[in-house]
Image (cartoon, rainbow, N blue to C red):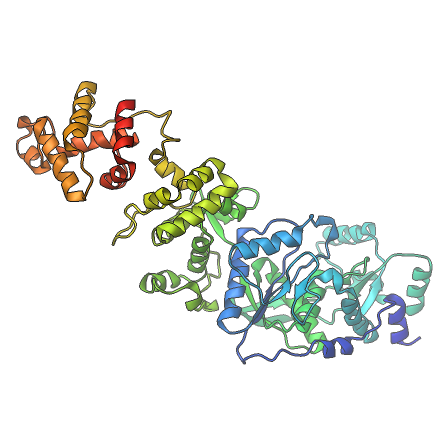
Length: 546
């Protein structure tokens, strides 16, 4: 029996050949240095921050070189797949402004000429490539059961040998065609394994775009390439998909670094030029003076849903990821505030090879700066959208008081040093609740220097009856000074400091009384702007409440 006839028995009903698929998927016609890369998740859960980081870098590198960024779904592990997993991934990327040029756009649809972009739909393609290996005596059928593999592993452990299916431990590598056919006839289940030509004592030398020049042991494991269900393993799917889809760069987490010898070997066996690899170190978190990997289980900030729930702008998250990716971005951005992330070119050489610290406080500081630079109308729309999903009470207030809310958001905004009290849109209500009568209840006044209630009553009564005027800021403040002087307070802080025994206090103490009565707080944005927006009737109402 010829090897081709033998391959047809091992992998039946595969109509096209390896050569056919090379013609179906021609090489891309792109500029010389264009990067073609992908984000290739499994639909087994939410996109976490580490995955978003890799996807962001991949999409950015492709875009800045006029290349292609595509979304491929690796759904060969059906046991771990979740409902609507693909839709969730697409939504997460879209929410963070990461757009694809090709790939999945729904659970079943895709755009692009190199699809299907979901592995479960590419079964025949993988099997055609595997048949090529069988025909060339570079792959074989393996009938080992889980129990038999466990026995091999135990024997290796007892002998203190390297663990794996290789060399003399690769039992079924040495089966004859007749032995294989008899096992198939008896109904024994099998997988297809690579017949590795490698030697573990040899070294594979390659240059990683992030890690630099590396030496790793050559692969000698007879890895599984086609599983019992006919679908490929990650290793084999990577070879087939990234070759046919024209991937020039593989950007992924450095947990895959040890797999590089396997992947380079697979490309070499087929005579394909391998892609360039960039292995990204995991995002780190500082805990008790030590660093550890950002954990999906331990750290709420690892889930990107965390940022939606808090109302942290996606733009701020991307600005932070760019800062983490290349440390020189932060200075560039400070010097080019009129420019966008797209105007900055990421550099593989400037990506940390050991893992960058994920600093939520720094992210929030970036977010504060970002929000402070928005127009009040933009803050309103973004806060409205946030509250629509996460705070119905706030949403109703913003809808009811649109123009008023925009004016509140504009306090201390359009100036050289804008107000920076919002790091997230959920902060708005926390920082400005007192501006809404519907929320101005169930609180305690926090007075500072002047605490005598009769004295406070004198201040607010005299202010309303004689000195209320918010026509402009100078007039307003001069009236506060005259109010202070009439009640025995210094109209200038300097005067009080020079003669403290002469006065009850100073104009700042009187202003503080008005601030606390109107807001319950001792620290607020510009009091004049607050009073101007509240208006006389509401101010009187709050004085009367006190």
